[in-house]
Length: 124
Image 1 (tube, rainbow, N blue to C red):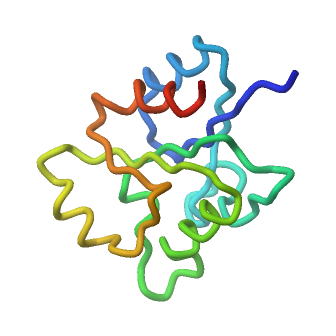
Image 2: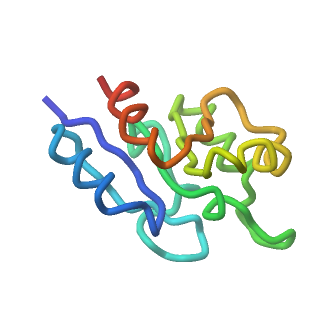
Image 3: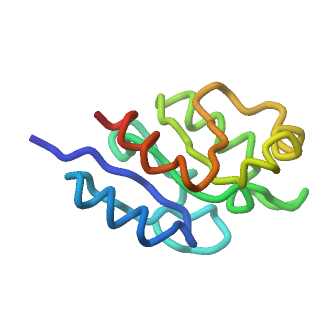
């Protein structure tokens, strides 16, 4: 049986990733297309998809002329049914939602203290 996998953007908390591994899931680095941290999120498809993506909001925010925009990442999440957990301090959630008004329901803003519980819930 294949283990479920979590794709994580650069800078994701190492304690979070350790807890995810200790709960029986794999963690795989994912690139936003600029940082070359792992496989580019743009290359995810039905064969290479992950069960969950995790990262900080700034990792999906692009400059206007960058090739990969947050909307492209949202499209990938919708197409392959991949939840995306974005860590944003709770007091900044309202401002963050204004930055990504086109985020689908699969994209959740979470205070970092809530991310592990929500990730495990989604992976169960």
